[in-house]
Amino acid sequence: MNDWVTGIMEQLGYLGIFLMMALENLFPPIPSEIVLPFGGFLTTYTNLTILGVITAATLGSVIGSMVLYCIGTFLDIPRLERLIDRYGQWIRLKLSDVQRANDWFQRRGYWTVFFCRMVPVIRSLISIPAGMTRMNFPIFIFLTTLGTILWNVILISFGVALGENWQQILGFMHVYSRFVYIAIIIILVVIAIILFKRKRQR
Image (cartoon, rainbow, N blue to C red; front, side):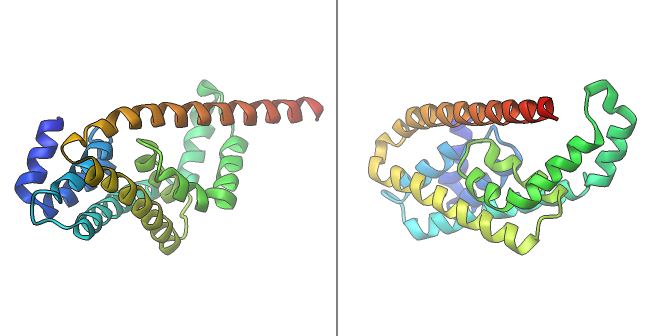
């Protein structure tokens, strides 16, 4: 997979970077942790520029996130509620759970989109609930672009700085990913405990 990704980028330049980042959003097993640092490395021995790589990568990411947003719109809340009303008992979900989750995303979802753009794998999938809740599209694009640019600039800069040793970033990203996932799990557990205590108090 890695050799295929880097080969496409070497052959197609900016277009290859654009395509790989668009696919990375639609197909998370293609990791941006490879595409972006290698894109930065390419600027050290080809005619590609740092600004050009950042632009191509950002455009690819935003286009990919737009596709997932559109997919999310087909999984709207009313349709999901009908499915849960029919099958929810089998997975222990109630309509109130969906409504509560929807309300939460409506209140805090905007910044969730921004921060999740810097979390591996989740950075792609966050576009689906944004589409499901019909998040304001211009705001979705703005925050997606903002978070994407920040993520891209950091990883591409690492690639430029490390040069031929750009793959060293993969070890760091592995640690970073594990730390973020552990933090997310802890937050979810804390939220679950709080909700459980509130339910018992009622």
